[in-house]
Image 1 (cartoon, rainbow, N blue to C red):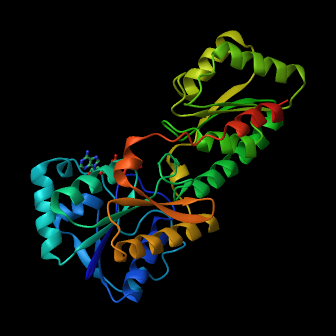
Image 2: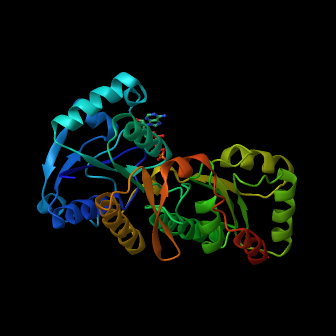
Length: 324
Ligand code: ATP
């Protein structure tokens, strides 16, 4: 390996910059050159690449988003698109890749690496914490902290007005953010994509809470909840449960932004460092992960073919007891 290409792809996540920085500095430390590729796979096709040195990644560890930008690139899903990308990658002298992103990014990397026999290592970057081969993804901790901050503020106004709030948080197929934020924010109920909660069951919980004279009630709804999001849940609850003041708050994209937490910066730094070292050891077509406090790798084929249940079942039970 003489030159490592690094890019971010799919949805952005806080901590991606810390990972880029670690990839660049670890590669340089080992005497390798580094090319930064803008806009993920699109940048390979458009050849928007630049030579990176140690100073290219100065003062980015604390920044949210990604300095390399990101994109969703349909052309890369075609054989012709990937052939064009490979031509440009080869012309730039890149002979190994580090891809930072989610499931789609990993799928693209796996296909590209097999097609053109180029070593690739992936780093899991997404706030949803829904990737296999790792306990944690980059951005998840920061997103949890952002959501908690919002819930605390909503609690202040909810308690002042005796309000019932439905707060929708990100997570299309993963309830990790909803569960964690729900526990940390003291939610009265948490609706998760992994587990269907009937509206009648939810109403029962809320009636029970109202009987106990709770001054405010917060229901966390993951966006992938089967009842169809916070607006729908609120509407259906209101049809049967006459609580005098109900509000909905959809947190949306603010959950993706902000300065990465200390935990995300450290995780991203360790992952970037490991990704380069694994490539130098000859490992390829794998994703970096963390299990407990150990860095591990999992072949992409394996990571993409199964579905780990990330939701902590104990915590689901604990959340119910804490809402009493
Ligand atoms: P997030 O979890 O935030 O959505 P992601 O990496 O899963 O992140 P996607 O948009 O699904 O985001 O994928 C990123 C990019 O990876 C796509 O825009 C596309 O360029 C590439 N990609 C995804 N699937 C494939 C595929 N089957 N073949 C080739 N490339 C793919």
